[in-house]
Image 1 (cartoon, rainbow, N blue to C red):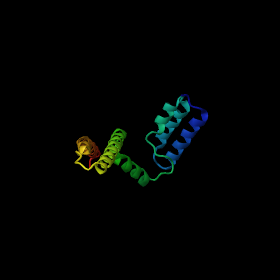
Image 2 (spheres, one colour; image 1 turned 90 degrees about the vertical axis):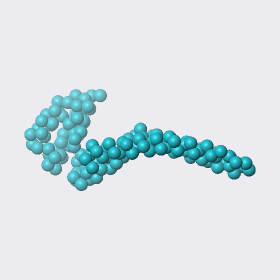
Image 3 (cartoon, rainbow, N blue to C red; image 1 turned 30 degrees about the horizontal axis):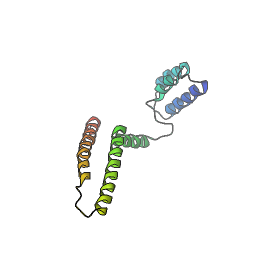
Image 4 (cartoon, helix red, strand yellow; image 1 turned 180 degrees about the vertical axis):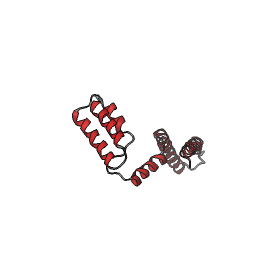
Length: 137
């Protein structure tokens, strides 16, 4: 999508703020500002500020946000855990209703949900170990 003059000005303002905060050298600022005013699309503009935090964030805030992002699970795992949790809850509720309404022994079928739960837990632990190794923890 093509960028407007106001979009270029917004990126230029963000670059100026980064220069003022000491995040960019004067040479980097000059290169990026030239590229900002020559950019035709949003993609060309966004690449210029991709490595910069929002203006006004302190270094401590940037580190805190980076730590939070590193601890967050990938979206695919969050979706899988949500699906597993919902299925487990439904099965346990149905089992409880059946067990209460019947006087005979009811086979505890929800126990089988532990198999995919353990597998999902192992994958999640593996992802966390790999992330920690990449970060050097």
